[in-house]
Length: 131
Image (cartoon, rainbow, N blue to C red; front, side, top):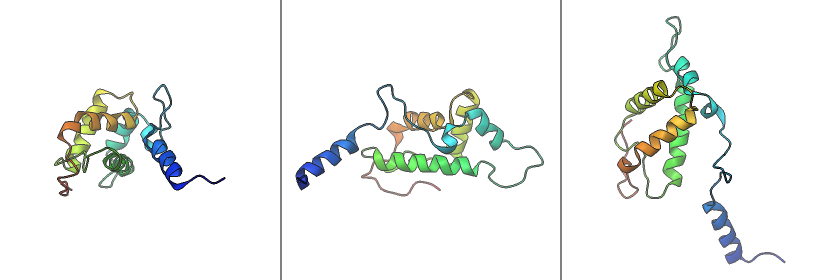
């Protein structure tokens, strides 16, 4: 017998509100987020022979995706960066990684969200953050 719409809605809501990690807080980290801060710093600080404007652009793209998901899924959050520009965000991450080279890149971005949570731009104040 097919489930009724209210039953299905309740089930889907419960699944959406259930944390995605296991009981110990473990979850799969995909892509560059699984690399260490030390690996990020090597890419971020290329040798003098390397050229290009953003040697860490793949890491930045990963970070932007993580923060976009954070903005979408955390209640009353329009922007975790608030008024912080992308260059300042990058500087924060570089400094964090210099102090914690053994942690995963994902943990560095997570640390940013924790340290800036109170300063985030709430959903009711929807103005575009700095580029």
